[in-house]
View 1 (tube, one colour):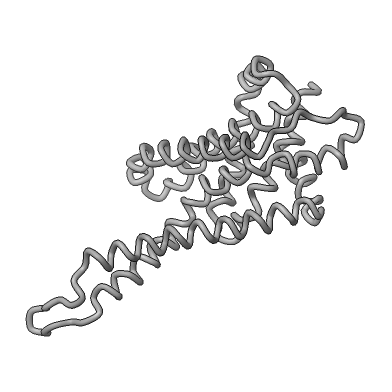
View 2 (tube, helix red, strand yellow):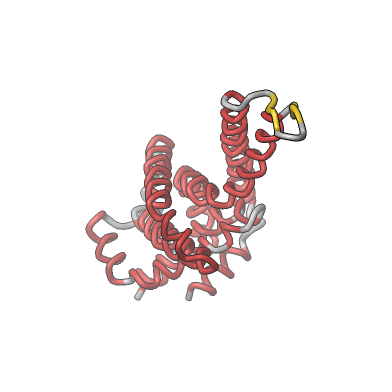
Length: 229
């Protein structure tokens, strides 16, 4: 079911509404990551001396610049991890746009869903952004202890978070809170595996920019398949 849902979402990739959200998300993600990278580099420059005296070598200039570029490189690596919360925040903001496009094409018999306002989408996205950052910060020690298996731990943790968030956001458009919780408990395994399936490609630079839209589209199909059962 998961692969079928993802294949349907992928088949709609060139839908104008998908492309619109992808373009907006791409620009916002780059701006946010760019600001974080710049701020990180500036902090290094401020707290690092412009030159340093090295025994037997002498004074080395532009030390701060060197560390600044090192910080830039580090942030590029960290962007793989940052894209999880960034993508999650943007998916919450633009949920309705993607879900509506999916339902109009694949489920035209359905009545209009209960949409969310821009404020509600922004609030939901920011709240989940904070949750993902906090949990990943707490789980960092487990990532370090896992060694070569760190990606699996990373995907498992974020799969649970993304799965629950995506499914809840999509289901809430057509069900009340109690029904959403009941359905989530009943299919928690499927939801977790679907979330992990989305979390894995979020670790791949460039590809991860497309996953928020594909994730919402995929979970829209998954919700209707589970709700129908």
